[in-house]
Image (cartoon, rainbow, N blue to C red; front, side, top):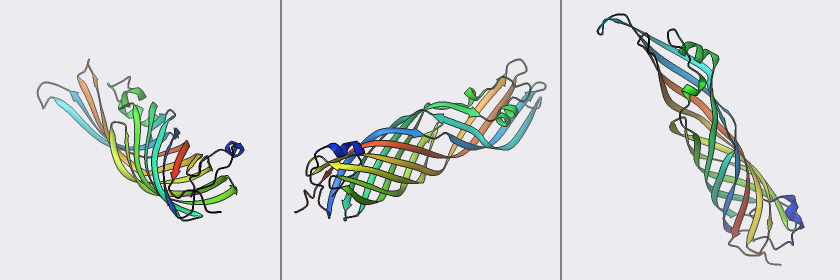
Length: 256
């Protein structure tokens, strides 16, 4: 068997027997995730109310519907990526299930110039990108099925690559959505005992478009004007992760 991930530097370690083909394995992985900035297309419905007298009839209500390509852009700091895996090694080919969790802190949220200009419709003024910020973190919980191909680089070091697909729950900007996701994987591993392998793994992860609902309200105290906006936000979560891994192979050492 083999679990894989490891740096070529590990090749200098004494080589233990790689685990047997035709056996199962379990493992844990953890490391750093670098989330890409997320571009959200925004469909906004804005209701602006301007008092013109007393009572309900003494006001002017204007409703506008506008779409903004890349209306909001979320920038995120490097975060954490951890997962648990369980799989079966058929030889050069492996199938595994993976339960993963990613978390990153929102560095900033930038509203487009068009969205800011429309929101700052007189007498509303002074609205900035910071006024659209909702929530501090992005969290992704995923369940994936991976297909991986192994290649024995040396008797003690294995490299592998493949990909997977599954479902992900993305929480960000004060809302959440469940979507399909896929990932690409590459890594290397070495055996440190007859049953245990350690390694290094790279993963590119991407979801389908997530759909979030949001809102913002602003007012001008001098005139009594209010502006209330409802947003439908649409964007993809993407990340690159670098993970250390450890796996236990149930097959034991291969027979000589």
